[in-house]
Length: 100
Image (cartoon, rainbow, N blue to C red; front, side):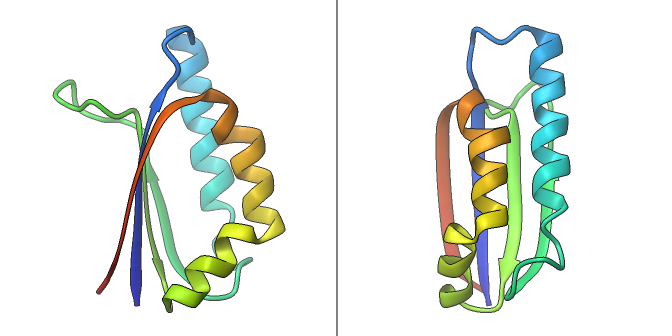
């Protein structure tokens, strides 16, 4: 199995209200992919970081294999969420994938 973790920082120009709405949209969109993408075992999005954090949103997901993760990256439903709810609002992305 493969763990896929992403941390995002939202753009500075977003107001607090826009950031809150954006985080909720990212969470809803990504978590709705559960059961829709082959090989995706688990997906969870955290949107309430402590003040000590320097990221706004975290994706924590598990895939059957590295091949399943690669297929997820280009799956149309994932691409739609990434292009519509994530990428337009993010200034920084850090990713780590590893076998578990």
